[in-house]
Image (cartoon, rainbow, N blue to C red; front, side, top):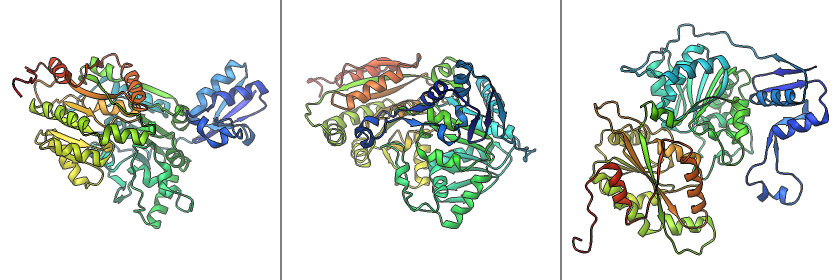
Length: 518
């Protein structure tokens, strides 16, 4: 009989395993990234392209999150085993920690289920759709755990402020903020993952923050803003940490979160949350390796059925091009960012929506693209990472209050933008990341509960460019949204019809212009 020694970060199999079992573990606990065939070492035959998470030659180690896969594999091969949990469950050191919900807080059945299940399992991935109150769920979970230090990791300073506001408003314990110009360490902390990874790599001369970006749309501040003493203190805090929650966990397959979680060997409680906990590069298994398997799945369609979210009507509008370019950068520039005809059409759609009192978010990838569109949409505001946090928050609040009816924003608005009054999103920037499609659609799904008769539908327009790369991205996005039964997916007839199609959905009295009334 073999033993499985379970640790917080890694676990180990003690005992002899037959070769066929070793091969099975190697196969199940590994993955081949989608771009492996383009790697030099693979082309030269020096590597087979698989990343292996089972380390036989280093003592039969594996990441603890993969325990369920190891148990399944041993069972399938008739291997008798016993699990020995060597983790030390920390004693609660915040016995008076209490969660107090907001006024008019709406109790939802799935929230308590998620909290109880996460507490019992001690780790895992929480798949919770945008608009489900994920941060409130984690706040109440932290109150139930009653253990510090606890770290709540976020990707951006805006998300840090949002998480801080929720935790500080609902928990009777000071909440620290670490990163993005804030440095206040408490027993419970919200911390940017970029700051944490800088602390972990404090004395690594080869460290470059640019190496830790998730994808081409993930824009991080590359400046070193914190001093060595502060980062050293943070590094010590990470080691002492007993509980971890990582937001937007689909970013976690990159080495950023691997480094940060590995620097917290004493963290017994480990959770990751996302509306889309999957990866396009074939590395989904890394999410499980770091946090454990998915333990809840609250999708958007369930929340729509329950009346918590509203139904989106998602138009895939064909955009035709006569383009014979070949590189992604040149095609994207020619067909999207510098295509005046296309961008004027996007602006016309945004202006139409605003004229019909629909607050609108126009998403782009590049600032200069946003600048062009902002000039074409009267009264709109451009939201980028260059704006101060104060100005960004003010612009978002104006959008909530409908003082501003249109915001043009870069991808910083993909995650965490909470505007229950938002009526429409135009995906003018496209993008290759299908994990972001759900995030972007999710901006319009929240129900405004401050009014007696909240809206029951929203509009999303995805521009389907018929050119290399961009067509593939659109097809991928189409497959993603069709997985949600309550997402109404409509194939538009094109730019001459889109306004009428939107009007049919929204019930507008629409009369298209003709040569007789131009």
